[in-house]
Length: 70
Image 1 (cartoon, rainbow, N blue to C red):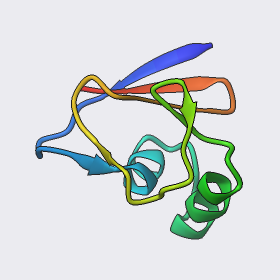
Image 2 (tube, helix red, strand yellow; image 1 turned 90 degrees about the vertical axis):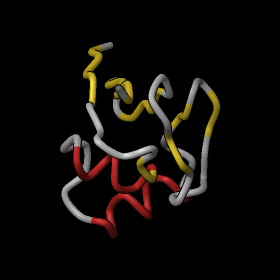
Image 3 (tube, rainbow, N blue to C red; image 1 turned 120 degrees about the horizontal axis):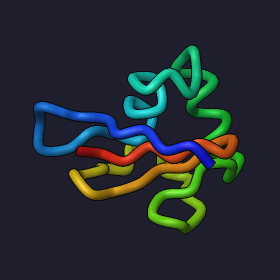
Image 4 (cartoon, rainbow, N blue to C red; image 1 turned 45 degrees about the horizontal axis):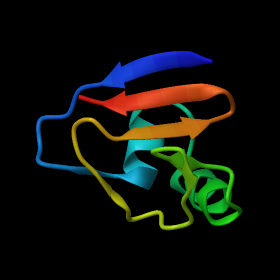
């Protein structure tokens, strides 16, 4: 599994925005579908909330890639 650190300048980033910003998905629609179908893990647990707020230290996983919010 590859791991990528995603540095944010705000207090938090929404899950769907993180996936778009990190390049894991191309569109918001794709992010919505993949999140709602349960393909995305947040901190090791399936997450179907696309507006889930991720803060520094949180991890999201999709397609064998891990994105760590920094």
